[in-house]
Length: 163
Image (cartoon, rainbow, N blue to C red):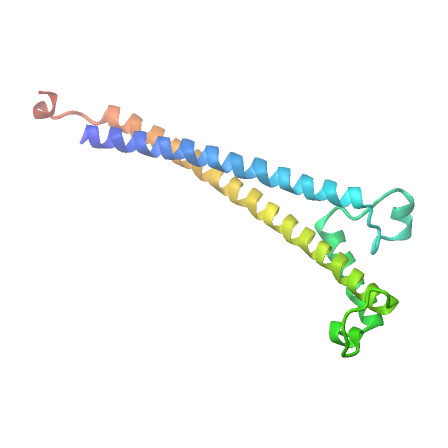
């Protein structure tokens, strides 16, 4: 019985270390991804949807809320040109020399970029949360493993088990 408890304790302790390590990697990569997306957005210097007072201070779109607001603003602007892509084309083909077609297409491209930024921020948040959960579970498993090892030392051995 002592041997089984000891092996179980070692196995649980090892699982705890692995979970803690994987959780730490998830947290690190999530923070890195979040930072990279924010840096890429800052480099583009998009200010659409940000109050003028903040733009004057140098603020640009670099967060999930700001990217969502920018995407919503772009939808409003595009719908002022036409309600749908088909409406913008008027039943014809895309003409890059037509300012209305070009404006609509550029709005779609920027809106897609903002929606991808929102998605990337969301994925990085999920990675960080998953990593934190794994790390907490790793600590809990580690504590459980240590408790099992201590318990294994305290279990009295029967005379037949000493042989």
